[in-house]
Length: 167
Image 1 (tube, rainbow, N blue to C red):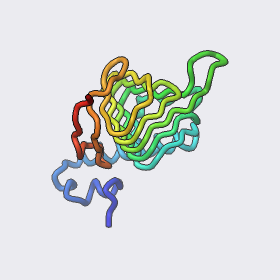
Image 2: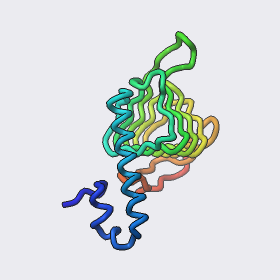
Image 3: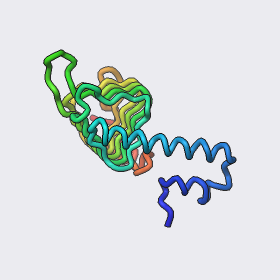
Image 4: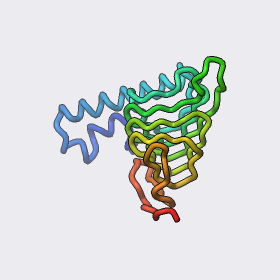
């Protein structure tokens, strides 16, 4: 059985014949670079990184206190997103930031230090998260506000249960 996320999967599965050779090479290179970046974050920077995370190379994981960032399984972090684990002062506090499982963080979103983000959460583009986030919700805005609750995300990042608006 070939794993869905394997590099070999790109060339031999049902998606394989439908893609041109150029598209297959692009996907192959993306997978290789993505895996290397996750390895780099885990081994050289000390980020606590779960399995099957998709972290864009242009996102920024705290450079001062990378060991204070804890990322769960099946997390997607988009380009220019910023995850912090220190408060910015020279002798300031180093705070642990926890991101749960099945979390999608949108383009340019900012996660402030010392927060806990629950499981099955979507954070919209350019949202600034300033408070802890409960499980199963969608946040947007600056500061981020909950616009939907009781959502569920699949391992591949799409919604299984759409939830409802909060009261």
